Length: 222
Image 1: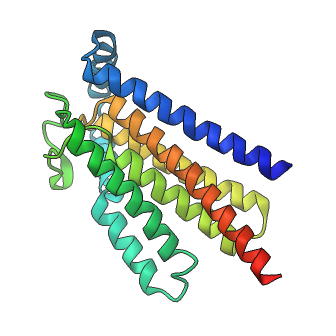
Image 2: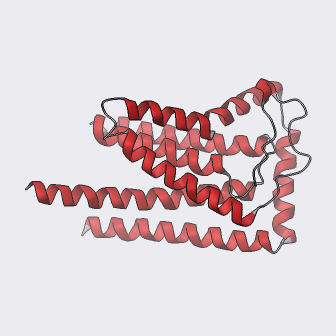
């Protein structure tokens, strides 16, 4: 009964996320004035609140949450002996997320925010040339770090407080990467919002698939 309730809850969360994504996308494509106003006001607030140390902090976060860094980390995990517990499932989920993100980017082709990028970005950080919607950092980084924390908790951590701490840290770190994209002026808030919605939906579905796989494996084992 509890498993059924959890399944319904996660499917409901996933459905709500997809619905909000579609609604937001429709407003973006229709160039809704109210939404555009909110997007630009939030970006202006970030631009007005910049400081040198924050520039460095958020640029470093953007590098960590980028495709190259995540791909390198997954490659390392695939080489290690525990790849069946960490590397392989992580690679599948992240690759699915990245492919979905790229497909939507190509279809929507939303231009990046104009005039909000750092005037002098540290560490040679350059303005991205790809489409803006949805945010790949917000989506794929969230999928990567939350999935990694989940797999570590599932396979290596026994105590509940440590599991909660790891998952909380993964969520906070993912949120900071998402904030970095707005702070740097390379994504509209709606890009980040929709990237996070897609990540949440994918995480719910991935968790349900994993639980189903574990249940099937346990039945065959018995």
